[in-house]
Length: 506
Image (cartoon, rainbow, N blue to C red; front, side, top):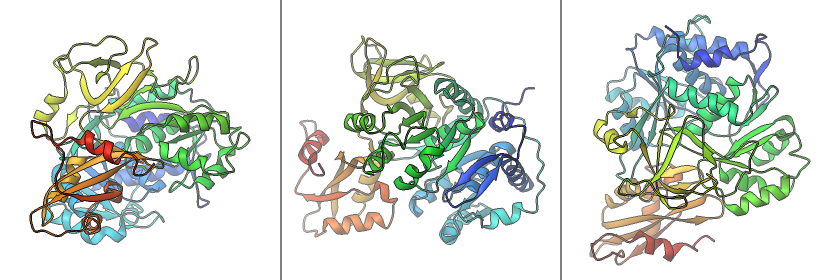
């Protein structure tokens, strides 16, 4: 039986000379390909020693580090399922993810061990380790005693590799199940489509708890045997300093806005670069054009989701990269635009985007009914995004079904936030809408109606949310109103609120 383990394919791409530098960090450390091989073997052996059941989940909420990447690769290598969690998540969120996914192993930062372990142990978990970004923690201490030789676990293409939590307007997070085949097929297509070649060097400045940084960037570099310049967090000046040593950069629109704010960004600084890629949120056309003028490079925009990895891309070569579009469907991806009545729409008409392909996920963890709802009878996944295809074949995303807000590349789900606000004493109802923001692209604004006789200040509402939830989810502004606008059917008219507050930050 052929081994379809994603790690096996990544390991096969390692160079014959394992002592070459694979990862260079922003604090002066160099990791060789041999280091990646040995460390992932030791971590895989540690996981194997725990007597975990087949398909066991390994949850990680840790700061970005090379060791955190090694934990991901080791989980694949050992044949288990990786569950990345945003470092900004707080107790209510972690309690849900642990309860829902039931991971056999939880890895967290040492500073969070007290409250994370309490949640994990209460849920019946037995294995909780720590891992910090300074190469310390109980995970590494235990792995240090394990062998640095490991035979990669034999996996089928359909076996689970990762569960990435997304959400919907119901506010209930959903675990998108991605297989080894899903991730490997997408990585191989992108390697060809984006022209990865010998000598490419990637600046990795993204977080590694979502698809963009964990899958697209890391798989691309490893599959191409490319060195990564690893930045623990985005720093515009440090990126500019490293650009002459690199050829590829991946970022969300917010990162490009911040780079453009640096006077040192110019054509000479970018002269060694081959490709700038943007995704995870819409790129403003002003940013697209200003980047062209300042650097001489045209940003390549692409489109993907947690459930599908990458779906479309503007061309790397042999075609125009058109600002405001996400290019064409990738090889192997079938994409169509349909009406609410499931009728295919003519060219240029706006409708719901549906996709099918080897990269499309297996479904939502523990939610067979929800999974069935999101797929059509002929096997297409309903993305929830709304767009159109022009006569040249370029795909444009014009909006999102429901009211998803993408702020700085992170998804904010209004229904989830409204649920927390509505649970506060004195609150009758609330609505969260997204409005334009010059830095984050889009931010949330909360409008709250109080119960009769209640007194609650906007600052109190925001402070309560900040004590409970990740900062990127917190509305940037909060207003108390006497009522919410409604249509004749009683539905809150969020379009009216968006119009009312659309110039709040611009």
